[in-house]
Amino acid sequence: MSADGGVRTVVTGVGVAAPNGIGAEAYWAATLAGRSGIAPTTRYDAAGYPLRLAGEVPAFDPEQHIPSRLIPQTDHGTRLSLYAADEALRDSALDPARLAPYGMGVATASSMGGFEFGQRELQNLWSKGGRFVSAYQSFAWFYAVNTGQISIRHGLKGSSNTVVTDAAGGLDALGNARRQIRKGTTAMLSGGVDGALCPLGVAGQLSSGAMSTGDRADRAFLPFADDAPGQVPGEGGAFLVLEDAASAQRRGARDYGELAGYAATFDPGPPPPGGAATGLVRAIRGALRDAGMAAADVDVVFADAAGVPDLDRAESQALGEVFGPGGVPVTAPKSMTGRLFAGGASLDLATALLALRDGVIPHTANVSRPGKGHPIDLVTREPREADLRSALVVARGRGGFNAAAVVRRDV
Image (cartoon, rainbow, N blue to C red; front, side, top):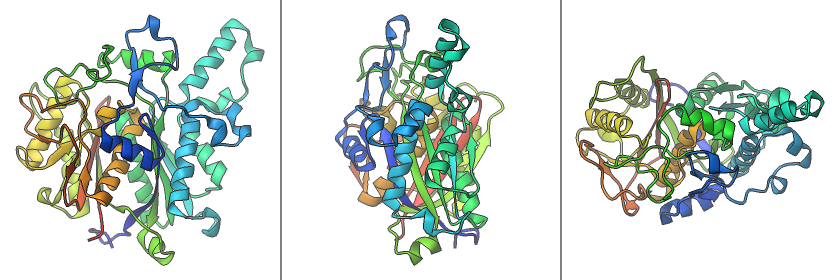
């Protein structure tokens, strides 16, 4: 049973599509080796845009991973989602056909939907005319399309949903999935994968004023550094199979750990200058309370790591308020992928589970030490071995969204 007497939810499968590795183990090996996936943009001609770098999933050939009939009707981001979902199911060794008809559902997060598909069809509309617009445009652009395509592909008829809370979405989707399991659903396929590295998607991100416009990949995204220049966008993310712990035990499944706590909050406005993000503090404390844990029980924090000085300072101050100055190791492996929007938090949670499995904290690449005013023990330069029993993952989305999740392994 969980801390509140409810159903325990464990993770039995992990699937990853990331800029520095396709597949969970390839991604994990690259992360521990400090190999970055941030590089000059290739998915569109960036000459007319100030944003020159991105975290692109390399050498992804959808025809090798998904049925040919799905190619014409899916956006690039949806294809990445289908791959990561397939890998998570394979990793879990769970056959949905063996479950009750409504025993498994899908919960995903999206921040932009199939924008690349939509941009192409809008270009066809204005340059060639309406009869050249794909009929699949009616749904391929939509935020919920990944949930639909995954559920159809695997025959998952259980309760399903999509959340749109920007970079907090990956955790919010997992929290929603756990809620369905507590209501009686046996298993859920959940997470987030985003992919809108196209002019339409980039234009929206540039409007935030938070993007890094440098052309040096090793200096473009520096979370918690004094000279943090902004965010580098990326594509990809992770899907996880969440399962009722009793079901996983009955079938002899390997589990990575328990999704023990989750909470979400909303900030109505920005934090005071130099102050903590109060909504994030409440989310962290809510997730710890949900897990039945104290701050001292947390062994590592996977940070949101905006790469924007004011946002980083508000986050580090929030962590200092909860854990005390330097009270717990903090890391930001997304420094090697860029910010994957709705895919980033679910990838961080997958990374946290791999860290618990192997007893090692991945480092924050390209940052030698935290800047002034950051009261955190930031893991830099190289991975740090540690006896890890639990991890906290935090995420913040544009507009005031905050989410926090706690995972812990059986000891």
